[in-house]
Amino acid sequence: MKLLILGGSGEAAGLARALDGDARYDVTLSLAGRTTEPTQLPGRLRRGGFGGAEGLARLLAEESYDLVIDATHPFAVRMKLHAIEAARASGVPLLAIRRPPWTPRDGDQWTMVESVDAAAAALGETPRRVFLTTGRMELAPFKEASQHFYIVRSVEAPAREHLPPRFELITARGPFHFADERALLQAREIDVLVTKNSGGEGAAAKLDAARALSIPVIMVGRPDLPDAPFVETIADAVAWLERTHGSTSSA
Ligand code: NAP
Image 1 (spheres, helix red, strand yellow):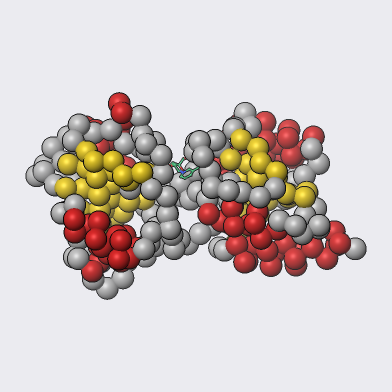
Image 2 (cartoon, rainbow, N blue to C red):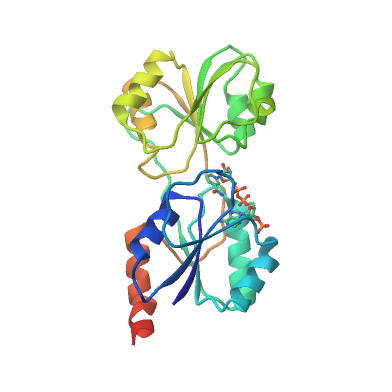
């Protein structure tokens, strides 16, 4: 079975690893190419855009894929929409992996907002020390809210011109752990955490640490997405493959 996994998330890497060495699956993992040094990944990799939904539909048909798996980051909306459109146009089935969002627990002080622009506005006028983990591509609104001091954490360093005037940069890749996150929030005297609702375990410890220290969180909500067949975890994706195709392709 020929699979194209649209990647850029832990689930994509995890699924590629789970299927690696299984002769029933011929897997290609596609990355946007945003990160110059992605984590060690097994199997065949391709990098860079397809040229929109049409380009992806063409590739799916011309290279005779049996299934496209959208395992992109929860906020990679354009790619998700293109995957749905390309699957429809090419007739190649689509399965999405949609990681559940984080939900507030007792003791959380979350302000829910719909965009990073709204998150910057929600910081208010009074200068604050902000732990900013929205990713290096979406810093522009915080550059404008220059009264705040930002501790910016991202996998790779943002371009200097994208950073706010007063900042400390931490480059790090998860998973992150509770004790480290709590120590970071305390040592940097953080007043507020700003994050996108990516969900998942690897980045959740900062929320536990914020709760433990009574630090408020500005949470950028998930974008709305059209319906598509989906599972929530790597294990469910593997089970879905076994159920739907594994037995026929091995016959
Ligand atoms: P996007 O806006 O949905 O994608 C933009 C374009 O990038 C797509 O139209 C496509 O180009 C190309 N692309 C995206 N994912 C691809 C993949 N797996 N394989 C090949 N091409 C791909 O997504 P984004 O710009 O990557 O990210 C948007 C949001 O997601 C941001 O908030 C970002 O922080 C977050 N995010 C993304 C990633 C990631 O690896 N993509 C990882 C972490 C966080 P064509 O139209 O030319 O096909």
